[in-house]
Structure formats: C-alpha cells, structure tokens
Length: 307
Image 1: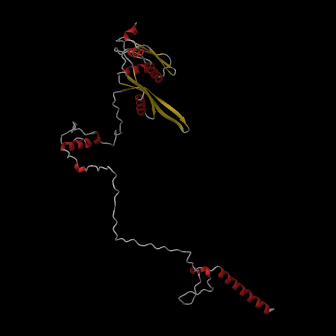
Image 2 (image 1 turned 90 degrees about the vertical axis):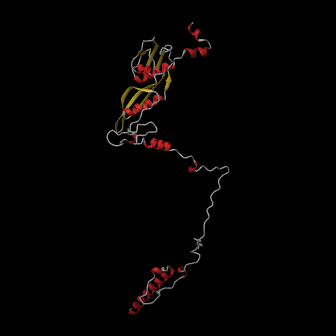
C-alpha cells in the first residue's frame, strides 16, 4: 500500500507538470513576460520550447522608406498668367499730388475744425464738434436724430397696452402719429414698443410709408363733399368758404391741419376711436377728385361742368 501511494503521488505530480508544459507550448508567453533565470547569464533561459507562432512573419509588417527631399534645391515660383485684356490698375503714386488745402479739408471733415482758428469747410473752429464731446456720464445716451424730409409729426394718441402671458403681464405703448408737409401730403401711422419714444418713432416711420395726396382748391379747401368709413367710424367732410377755418375735432382736425387744409368742415358721426377716425378721414380724402381730372376723363372743357 505504501508503494502504491508513493507511485500515485509521483504520477500525479508528473501529470500536472506535463499538463503545464503542454499548455505553455500551445499558448507561449511573449518575450517581455518570459521568466528570467537567476543565473548570471547574458541571455534568458526559457523552460519551454518556442513554437513557430512566436516568430514574426515578414508579411505581417511592411516598412516603407521615403526618399528625403533635398533642402538645398531652389523652388521657382511661377505666378498665374493674367487673363486676356487685363489692364493693371494705376499706382497710388502715379496720381496728381493733392494740395495742402485739400488735405486740410479732408482732415477737418474727419476730425473736425482745427484749433488754429482756420476752417476750410465753414465750421466754427472755437466750438467743439459733437464727435469730440464727452460720450460717457449723465445725459450721454445716444439720441436718434429726427428725419429731416420736410414732414412734420403730430402725436394723436398714446395708450398703454397690456398683454397677459404665462409669467405675468407685459406692458407696451401704442402711439398714433400723423405726418404731413402742410402742402397736400399727409399720412397716418401706428406703432407699438416698450417705450413711448420708440413707439412714436415706429409710428412715424409707418406713417411715412402711407403718404397720400389731398386734392385742394386755390382757397385751400376740398373740391366737393365726401364721406369715409373705416371699421365702426364714419367721417363726413364738407368744403367751406375762405375764412371759415377748420371746424372739426379729434383726429379729423389733426389730419386736415397736417395736410394743409385751412377751410373745411368735419364731423365724426359714429365711433370716437382716434385711429379709426384718422383712417376714415384718409378714406374720405381718397374719394375726392379735382375738377380738371373729371373734365379730362369725360373729354369736355371745365366750363361745361358747371352747366
């Protein structure tokens, strides 16, 4: 029994070792993970035989060599030829020389008049230019200059408009403005903004886009009667004799005065809404025609219109 036990133990140890060597032969370790011998030898000793799978095949890696360019070789730049009929622009120095007065005028236009007391553009050299004024501090907010196109502006109405949204209420302003040159041209506009000044500017711009011409006689009155409707508003316009003046109220009076009408009768019949009455006045004015236009359309002289 003792002999059989010893033989069995030696057989089991031998089988385990052979199993380890068979596994290592099937899956060899790489060179960097191979065990190193304790003996002082220049090359490591492997306890197992390297198989053909550990050798690197030539087909697995390819090395490409590039020829180094010569850095001493000169590269010649060849520009693109110009197209046919190309005329090169004149040089800056080829033009005529500018006079000293022209140079001084150019500097004055850019930087303002000089402090020497001489101005070539007619400016006052002792008054500081607006470009050179202080741009910071109290009252330095940029103000938009009014458009100088010959039209005068007149505010008819400014109202607060509240819009209810999810987060609360939004407050805006709505302005109704009438613009005119008092020579027969007038326009009505409306605009909304968060500030009154911005709303007036928007409405004035909108009014300039809707300019109409008012037909008038030599007595600065209407040629005939006319009625205008806009929405729920109705306006009645009648001519008047010289010296009568503009007898009207509300938005109708403002529209007639901005148009340059001096003798007229106006009446708001239905609604009192300022915007609708102003637009109804514009509709009534657009219905009017001059006597010369009617005579030309009929092909008869103007004298026959009074018969």
